[in-house]
Image (cartoon, rainbow, N blue to C red):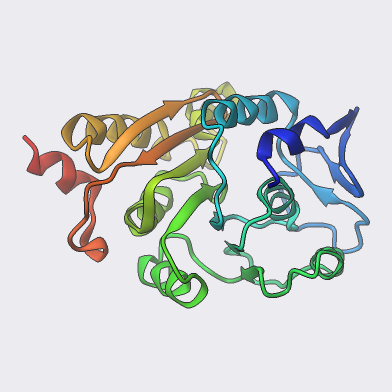
Length: 255
């Protein structure tokens, strides 16, 4: 069985790119515009220190082998390919707000893995649209989710909405990852001219998750905080109505 740790150990870091077997991932920090449709490699916005933190996470969960993965944020498909190579899941679904379609390079990747029935992408999909996210899960998976990775807007409102929609659909022991939570502590985002200067920091969501852990440890088993991401582990307690799940009400109901 393929393991994430074994795949991570095969990575070859080469300056501005990293290689994984026959795949090339460019590490440039692309912030604006759209992906390069003519590129002959993937973009991966995960430099080595971030990947090392994922190594630590998976080392702490050696038996974690997710088969049903839901990803928020596609960009050019690089992270989708990266996670698919790490876990070899039965199903990997990714959504993105951009009104575009899969690049030719991504299509060739899927074909090279004979994975057309295992990888699905949904473009023009708003991560804050809870009903649509639940609908996609119902269409795409035949069981509970094992892993959700949110690398989409990084904004408080949409990120919280996605969590409330998808976390109840995780299996017991499943992991929910929110990437890039500490942006509000970086100077560039606090400059008055930055478009996010007045946005609520994702730190507030991390604090809410910790409060929820203290209030309902049966629902949230653990919260792991790393510099690059926060990981919420699903507990075994049943959520009676997943469509009504609310972090605020979860904390308030336990007071």
